[in-house]
Length: 428
Image 1 (cartoon, rainbow, N blue to C red):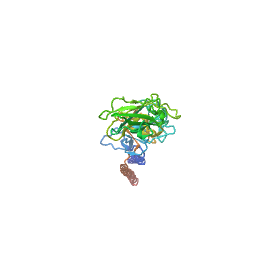
Image 2: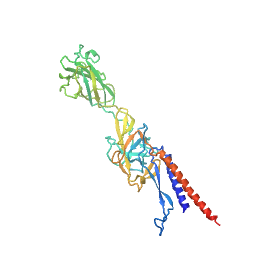
Image 3: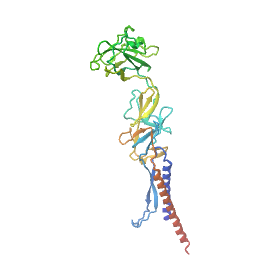
Image 4: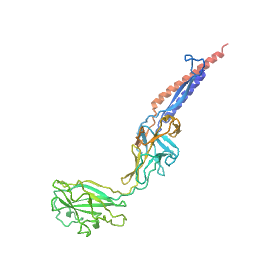
């Protein structure tokens, strides 16, 4: 019996050393989960044996149990390096269609964009999730997960339709001595400012505003012009079709009065004619001056905004904690591309290791419970980070010493049994 016991001890110690060696070898593998060999004793069945007289016949390896504990998160600077802070696995597929192909699961969040625009891992497997609607740009809350594809097309431009400005006109100023108003003569107006607006093709234009203090108390005249083009100036003395400057009134406390109503409908009603051959539609937008004041302070613009923008190319990507993947464009706009999903299992140790940091579901693991990050017991996503291996090198090295001693002790039992048998053989 001692030979069998010693051999079984050598086997389990060898298996334990193999598990420890694998842990140490993967201590630098992103998303790796360390494993421990678990042992069980062996007893021979005996009809007349009792609990007090049974002698075990060794040990065997009951299982190799993986530890799905959280690894440390390390910042990388790459926005498509993703770490799960909490429970769950990334869901990968070898096909692009929704719920198509064979699914596999990983904790390694090192992803990149392939030549077709899909987000993949180093083995070319597709990261799955919920794709944004190509028309509305909205990401659905649920649905069958499919490969997430980045939209690399230009983002469409948007013509300015609303504009806003908050400024202070200096109440201490007097009406200009030079008349009539002339945009090329600074002595004919009191103050001026410029705002960038965009036409239907995304071309930028300078929207110029000139403020002329009136001889009437608390009253100003505002002239507007586009790109210094005289045909866009709202001055009847220059442009016969213009309706004239806009009169802005303030009360004695320096606040805007209700006339004219805000926002302002700028001249002309058909839109500012665009010079040249841009091919864009005439530019029409409203201007809201709510919050503007007339105080005894120098002229200044406090707030400026408009809702137009030019076209833009995809220049970057970001991933939020809820897994939303967002494209960043050269014009400062953003667009949602999709939202990745995570999966959990009732028994993660029932998963089959496939190598390459991949697991596949089995009968023992149960079916995957798929959801978006942050739902239920699913973790959240930390972009530009990776999850390190959860292997504790110090503990592994100590365990290696323990198993080495156990291996030597089991070898010693075999050696001792051999010496006993040799003694019996030598009896005369």
